Amino acid sequence: MVVIAIIAALSIIYSSINYKGTQAERFKEGIAESDSLLTKELQYVFEDDSLSVQQFMGNNVVLLFWATWSEKSQFMIDEIYTLADQTDSLVVLAAIVKDARETIDESSLRDGLYYVDGADLFNDLKVPGIPSYILFDPTGKVKYVHIGYQENAGYGLLRDKINE
Image 1 (cartoon, helix red, strand yellow):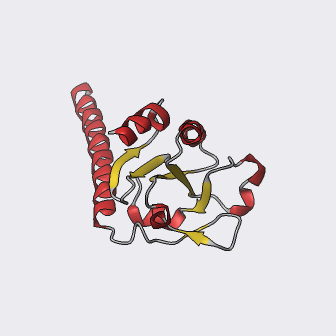
Image 2 (cartoon, rainbow, N blue to C red):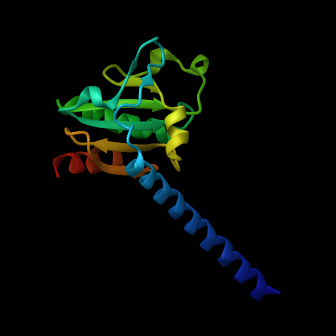
C-alpha cells in the first residue's frame, strides 16, 4: 500500500511539472505565432484611448502581465519600475489581468508606466502565470520571455537581457 502511495505521489509530481513545462512552451509558441502582438490595441485602464507595442519601436519594451491582488506582481512591478527609472530607452506596458477597473486604486499606480487592460491578450496567449513579461527589443522582436516571479527577475535579469 505504501509503495502504491509513493508511486502515485511521484506520478502526480511528474505530471504537475510536465504540465507547467507544457504551459510555458504553449505560451512561447503563442508569442512566436502571433503576427499581431506588436499591433494589438491595448485599452488604457483609466482612459478611452489605446496603444500598441509598435508605437514604442526604437525602445526596449516590457509587456508585463500582472494583477493588483498578487503580491508577487507588486514585487515584479517595483523591480521593473526601478529599472525603467534608471533606463531612458525602456518603456513598460503594465497589462492588468483578472481585475475589474472598479477594484483598481488609481492612486497606487506608478507614474511613467502605461497601464492597459491585458485580460484578452493574457487569455489569447495562454500566459501560464502571474506575473510574467515579454521583452521586445527596439526593432519589435521578442528578445526574452519570463514566467512567474523570482527575486531580481524584474531588475537584474531584465537589465542583463536588455544589454545582451
